[in-house]
Length: 178
Ligand SMILES: CC(C)(COP(=O)(O)OP(=O)(O)OC[C@H]1O[C@@H](n2cnc3c(N)ncnc32)[C@H](O)[C@@H]1OP(=O)(O)O)[C@@H](O)C(=O)NCCC(=O)NCCS
Image (cartoon, rainbow, N blue to C red; front, side, top):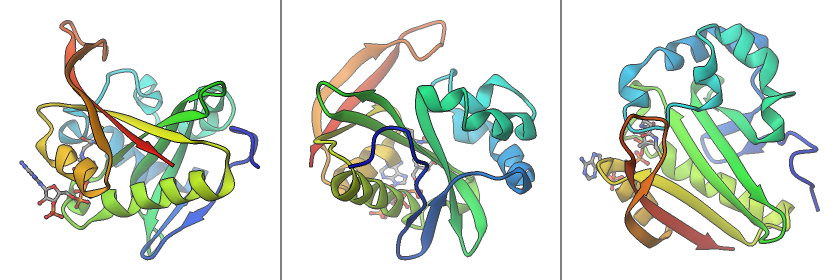
């Protein structure tokens, strides 16, 4: 059973590979980091938002960030599509949360579905995690649809959370027992 986050997994799926980011991925990550549409419905404190320099983000991603969260690059035919994240590990509850963000040109092709399925399969088969959760903005209609397609249950709706904005963010809370 793998201990979080002692190993950085490489997770293949039908069309995608979820793997550790490398220095050579900096230009692609830079494009994502500078896409306002991508971050419209996301917390302000995501790790890659701490810097404007993608090379620096990658150099720190697997040391200091790894204490809190595991961020993997998502690739289709070796082309960078975006990021998948596992965070909020609670050993006592055997629970983690997941999240993702993808370049706009990849939206609407089922990438989020496939990434979630790949993360869930990895967590179920290779770790002792028993509950996967996610928080999404109520306003973010496409992600609501994605969570439903992936069989997550809506456990709370319209909850106020601090996502780093001046006003509380209104979110949906989702969970999937493994
Ligand atoms: C939200 C996001 C992850 C979805 O990724 P994606 O790969 O485009 O998702 P998918 O293609 O798997 O599915 C999107 C679904 O939403 C549907 N959709 C799109 N806009 C919608 C809307 N306004 N209302 C309802 N459904 C909508 C699409 O039709 C599609 O459903 P379908 O497959 O049944 O046709 C992606 O748009 C993204 O990275 N956004 C920016 C970051 C973000 O918001 N991340 C999630 C935060 S928790």
